[in-house]
Image (tube, rainbow, N blue to C red; front, side):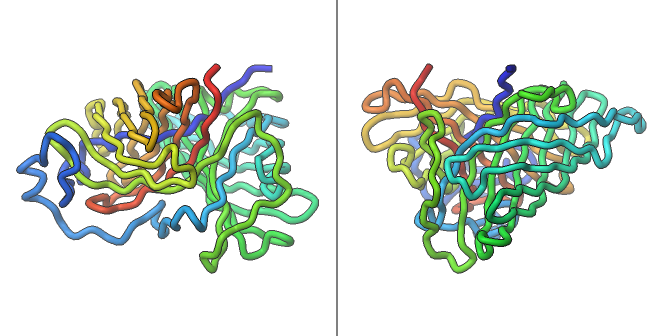
Length: 333
C-alpha cells in the first residue's frame, strides 16, 4: 500500500493582495507594526471560516482519521486554452475516524480547472454513509503549481441519527489524486458541531493510531516588519498560545493566485512547536481562498511530539479575524 497523506496545517498568511495591507491593533511582536500597513487598515467583517462563523473550541468536537481509496477517479483532463479541466469525476473512499459517526463510505464528485503550470482550483460534492445515517456536503480546494499538493475543505450536514450536526474538515493530498490507486491513504482532520452551539459529546470513539485530534481557531493579531502574529485557541492547551510566522510567497499569477510557505513558531504553556516549512496556496482574486498546512516539532515538554495543523479561510482578512484550525498531535516517528 502506498500511503499518500493528507496532512494538516497551521500557517503563514500570504503577504499579497488585501492581506498585505493588514496590521493589528495589538503589538504582540517584538518588531512592531509596519507603518504602511497601519495606515491602510480598513473595516473587516466578523470572524469567518469559509464565510461562516467560527465556533469557540468548547463547541467543537475534534476528529481525525484516514480514508482508503476504494475506487479511484478515472476522468482524464480535457485541454482548455493553455490549461485543462475535469468535470464530474467520481471516486469512493472508506474512512475510519476517531468518532465513528463520521466513519463510513464517502462518494466524491469532483471538478477541476488547471492552469498551464499545473495549479488550479477544485470543487464538488461528497456524501458519507454508514449504518446510522449520512452526511451530505460540498467542498472547495486549491492545487499548487506542478500539481504538487491539493488542498480540500469540506462542509457536511448530518441526516438520520446525525440530524442537527455539522461536520467540517481539511485534507491535503500530496500529488495528483487522478493517479491514485485503490489502497492509497488520505489523512484528514476536522470537527463536529451542533447548530445550537452546545457541546458535542463523543460517541463510539475509535482508536486513531496514537493521533490526538485538535481543533479551534487562530486569531490574527498583528503584522510586524517581518513576522505575522496569531493567537491559537485550541481544544488541547498544548497547542494554544502565541504564534509568529514568517511568510514567503511566490510571485502572483495574473489572476492573483499564488503558492506560499515559510516558517512558524508556536509558544505553548510548557514548550514550543517549530515548523521549518509550511505550505499553502491562495486562489484567484475573485475568491480569495487560502489553504495551508504545516508539521511542527515539539520542544521542551513537547519533545518527541509532532503537531499537524490545517487552516482554510477566505479574504477579506484583518485584525481579530478568526481562522478555523484543525489537526492532530502524534508521537514523532
